[in-house]
Structures are given as C-alpha cells and as structure tokens.
Image (cartoon, rainbow, N blue to C red; front, side, top):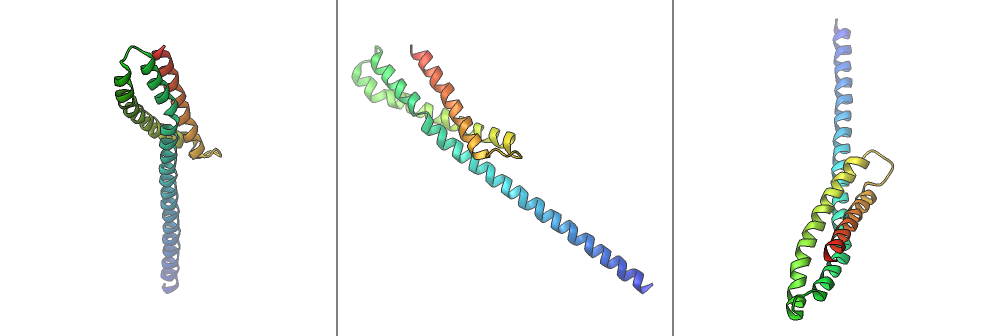
Length: 135
C-alpha cells in the first residue's frame, strides 16, 4: 500500500511540473506577443507620422497657391494642416500596427515590417486624397 501511494504522489508531482512548465511557456509566449505588438505599433506610428510629411507640404503649398492671403496662409496653414494630419497619421499607425499584428503574428513575415508597410499605405491614401481635394 505504501508503494502505491508513493507512486501516485510521484505521478501527481510529475503532472504538476508539466502543467507548471506549460503555463510558464504560455505566459512567456503571451509576453513576447504583447511586446511584438507594441513594437509594431510604435514603428507604424513613427512611419505614419514621417510619411505624412508630403501630405502636409502639399497642403501648405496648395493653401499658399489658393485665394488665402499670403500672410494668413504662411502663419495658419501649418497649424490647420499639421495638427490634423499628425493626428490622422498617428491613428492610422496604431490601426496599421494592430492590423499587422493580427494578420502576421504567426507568419514568417516580420510584424514590424508589415506594420510599417501598412502605415505607409495609409499615408499614400492620405496623400492621394489631399492631392484630389486640393485640385
């Protein structure tokens, strides 16, 4: 009877160690996934904000060319266009980073590079609309 109880205790301890190892591995995977998601969002936001510069420049030149008075256009066009475009670009970067993490998390493609590509695609669409609306 004693050997049977010792065997059960050993089996229980082995099962417990296996469950603990699996939980540690799952926790490690979750932490790495969250870190990868955060890095993708950060890279996408930076790329999106830098990629919005052509849209800002085009908008400022279009406002200077338009019927705005030159002094007003030079002073207030950056304020009217820089802040909204940076907000739009930052939001597009966050959405692009989350989308890239959701789509490419378990693939061989780098999530960070996919997030940057998605953010730059959003910037290309923004520039397209700025050009179309300013013509």
